[in-house]
Picture 1 (tube, one colour):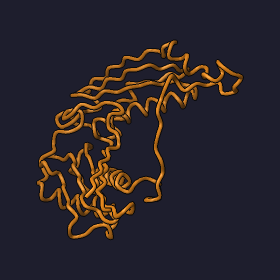
Picture 2: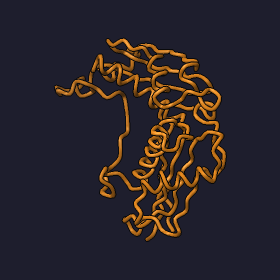
Picture 3: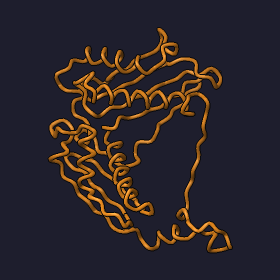
Picture 4: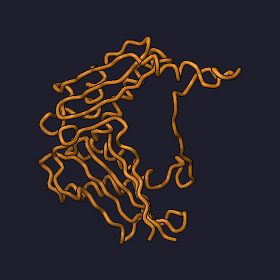
Length: 261
């Protein structure tokens, strides 16, 4: 049986990924000072502003506004006219300590309360975890998401190293792999949408992305004359980042789609 499987990834400049990056950076900073820190930190990105909210209990002291601005700077956001500027954007912080009621599910495990179990630390009140590894790639991830992630990283690399100096931070990638049975057979379609400066024309951008991003990542033996390429398929993508779309922590999952044909 033949089937198509599609996965999507986003660059570090995508509004949702910006929020993930900021929250992760705040978490890392607290853990560096206090390994027992409890950090439930959410970030919202919107036009010209970043909002950080949540509950944090820690012995560490972190300059959250500095982390926000440094993170935006590291991503490359320095233009309020097209996306957001780390120097001038508003940063709102609303952080409180973790609720004592929530802490009850973490301070002591259910097992330690009901038996003589040595497991003393709890995992909260409830949760669902699932997933599995596969042997399609060296990183033990399915091929479509592996290639989508690599395309997103390559898109960031050619921007930051000025191989394509007209790119801006926001971008998305998508790869559709055709399978025969459970074995990857070929690439059916590749989608790359990238923010860019107004000065570049679409013909140049599409040629450059195909040569410097797609062909540098996708194995040649998986491409054929029927592989479809969609590069900035909607056209102009100058306005991006939080100016073009709001962002939220943990909103951008690894989207996957399956078609049987």
